[in-house]
Figure (spheres, rainbow, N blue to C red):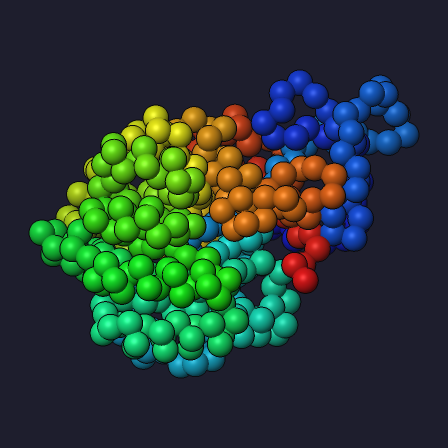
Length: 380
C-alpha cells in the first residue's frame, strides 16, 4: 500500500527523476523543499543512503471528474447521497495513491464538496475546480450566460469549463458543430477573465479551437481533430493543449472496463485514431502540452498514469510526457513558480519511487514502484 506523507523529511543521496548520474541531498520542512543540493560526500556507513530511490514532482492531472460515479449520469442520480459521498472519497484516495497530488476537476465537483471530503475523510489531494459545466442547455444568449457564470463564481470555483462542441454522445457528422454562437463564446471567456477566472474548453476541433485561440483561453481539451494550422497558432498564443488521450482508447474497447454501447465505442475509436495526428501537429509546432485523463468512474480513478503510456505511444518522448504532468501542468494552472519541480522554495508535492520512473516499461510497473506520495504545504 502506497504511503501518503506530509511530515518533514530528509533524503540522502537520492536521485531526481530525469537527471542522470547525480545524487542529491534533499530536505523538506513545513511542506516545502528547503534544500536541494548535489551530494558531494561519500556514503556514511552510519546513514543509510537513499541511492536506490528516485524523487519526482507530484503528478498534476489537469482534467478529471472526481464527483462522477457513473459514465451515465442518470445512473448516478439513482444512488443514495451517502453512497455517492463514499465513492467520491474513494476517488480522491485512489487518485492520490497513484501519485497525483494536484487535480483540476473539469466539471461536477463543487469547492464545498472538495472541502467536505478533505475535512471528513482526511484526504490531502489538492483540487482546483470549475464547478458546473456550461453546455448546450446554456446556449440561450448572453444575458442567461452572465447569470450562469455569476452562479459559478459564487461557488468559489477558480475555473470555467465551456463545452464548446459535442463529444462521445454526439453523432459523428455533428461533433465539431459549435454549441454556442461566436458572440456567446467570446462573452463567456471575456466575463470569466474579467472576474479573474481561468477557462478550459472542451472541443474536439473545428471553429471552436479558433475561437479559443482568439479569446485567449488557458487550455483546450481533447482536440483530436486539431489541424496543422491551428497547432501553429496554439503555439504562438501559448494556449495549452490537454489531449486526454487514454480515455478514448479505453472507451473504444467494447469489452473494456467501461463496456460502452457499440455506437459510443465506434466514436471513441475514431477519436483515438485521430489523436496521434493532432499530437504530431502540436509537437512539431511547439505547443505546450498538459497531462489530463478525463477519468470519471471508480474503474478508472487510480490508474491515471496510463495517460503517460498513451502520450508516448502517440509520439511524445518520455521526458515530454513527464513535463506535461509536472512543470508544464503547473504553468497551465498559473503556479509554475511554486509547483511542479524539485527546487528549493517549491511546494514539496512529490513521489518517491524504488525504480527510475523514466525507465519503467508501462504505467503498471510505474505504479508498482511508488514507495510513497508526499504532500506539501496547502495553498493558502
